[in-house]
Structure formats: structure tokens, C-alpha cells
Length: 275
Ligand SMILES: NC(=O)c1ccc[n+]([C@@H]2O[C@H](COP(=O)([O-])OP(=O)(O)OC[C@H]3O[C@@H](n4cnc5c(N)ncnc54)[C@H](OP(=O)(O)O)[C@@H]3O)[C@@H](O)[C@H]2O)c1
Image (cartoon, rainbow, N blue to C red; front, side):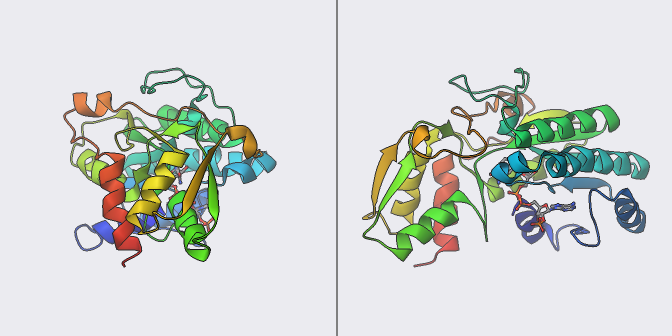
């Protein structure tokens, strides 16, 4: 989903090489070598991952192979090619137990296989590829989906008379792939920047509050939304209560601020579902 947005925004503006399965597999180092050798990238944005959080819980081995070893393979290939690596990571590296915003320097404590394997991927990038930026994103949606936004619009359109029951005690920064792309453009324009940056939209909301705004923007504000507690939706992977990420480091680096989640969503919904 993020890769799709980057391709749409950057095609034409840059000499872009888009690598994807099956010919380019992050778990197969030789396929990376072939792709990097042919293209000789200056910079690589690594978006590939096993992103289904519940599936990761059920297949730890595959999650580790993709998220940890896959990132290590990309990092090694970048070093060999002399390319800068921008690796995408997640709020799930934190426990999510503490209210408020997490800073890049806060202690990590993943509670899920997904989070633990993504953190192992981050660690591999740090250890193997000095010229790297790790961009942590969260609550992501973008053209084509799949995403929470797509699910809510689909459910509300299917049956506008239904009541949508949505968790109201998990809080985060809903973030558009477009906003992340903007931040990545700024980072790519600053080759001296290295390290970990939080790249989520500004402002904090619950899934329930997020749903109400999605439906309002989609012209589905009449659909009833009922708040519920996390316990009402037991999932294989526990969800973090507090996912919000601080962008103080982004500001300190002189990078442009992220849009608010409301601004980003207001740009996205009418474009994805024109009325
Ligand atoms: N979505 C979110 O809410 C969210 C939140 C926090 C962080 N992130 C991070 O943001 C990044 C982008 O996420 P996204 O939502 O755009 O995920 P996505 O749509 O699931 O994209 C991940 C892509 O990786 C591909 N892939 C899987 N195995 C691969 C392999 N062995 N080699 C090469 N490619 C492979 C997938 O292909 P298939 O579809 O064919 O498997 C998929 O196209 C990921 O690093 C993710 O961890 C996402």
C-alpha cells in the first residue's frame, strides 16, 4: 500500500526502479543482488513486510524470515551497492501500555510477533547499514488499501442501517501514505540525516473517533457508531492501547511538520470515494 503511493508520486520525477515479488524477494538475497546490480540505486525505500499482525502471531517463523531477515538482506544489499537505506517500521515496537506520545529514544518492548520481528529488522538495519533512516509509521491508510478506512467505508456502504461497533480505548495517529511519502521526500532531500524518525500524522484519536470522521467525510455520517472496549474484539495479537508517536525529532531536524490526521483524511476520503 505504501509502495503503491510512492510509485504514483515519484514516477516521472525520479529514475525509479520498482522491485516486487516474485522477481524481487527480500528473503532471497540473490534476487536483491540482481535487482540492485542492474539498477545501482542511490537510495532504497524498503516497504516490504509481513504486515498481517494476527497472521504473524500464528507463523512466527515466516514473520521473522520476512521482517527481520528480509530487512537484514536489504541492508546488506544497500551496503554492497553504496545505497542509502530508508526502512519503514512501526509503532508496534513499543508496548503501547503508557499513555502519551512515544519518542524515538523511548525503550522498545514489543508485545507481538509482528512488533518483535519488525524490531529485529530495525536492529539489523542499524547494525549492518550505517547510511540508514528508519521511519516508523502507524495506523496507515492509502489508495487501494486494504486499510481500516476501506473496511469502515465498505461496511457502512453495504448496510447504512447497521450499527458499527468500534474500539474506543485504543489511541493513535491515523496516517496517510501520502503524508508518509511527503516526509520521505523531505528525508531523501537531506542525505546527511541518519537514524530513527517517527513519521505519523499529528493528533491523537481512538479508532471509534477515527471511524466517525471517516464516515462523515464519506457522506455516511448517518451510520450509527457505537463505542466499545478492546475486550469486545479479542484478537490473536494484542493491540497497543497507546500508539501515538512524537514528531519532536522531525521538527528538531528542520523537516516539515506532518499534517494533522484530520487534514490528511480530508484529502484522502473524497479522492478515494468520489461522490
Ligand atoms: N499498514 C499499517 O497500518 C502499518 C502500520 C505500521 C507500520 N507499517 C509498515 O509500513 C510498511 C508498509 O506497509 P503497507 O501497509 O504498505 O504493507 P503492505 O500493503 O502489506 O505491503 C507490504 C508488501 O510487502 C510484500 N512482500 C511480502 N513478502 C515479501 C517478500 N518476501 N519480498 C518482497 N516483498 C514482499 C507484500 O506482498 P504480498 O501482498 O504479495 O504479500 C506487500 O506488497 C511495512 O514495513 C509495515 O510494516 C504499516
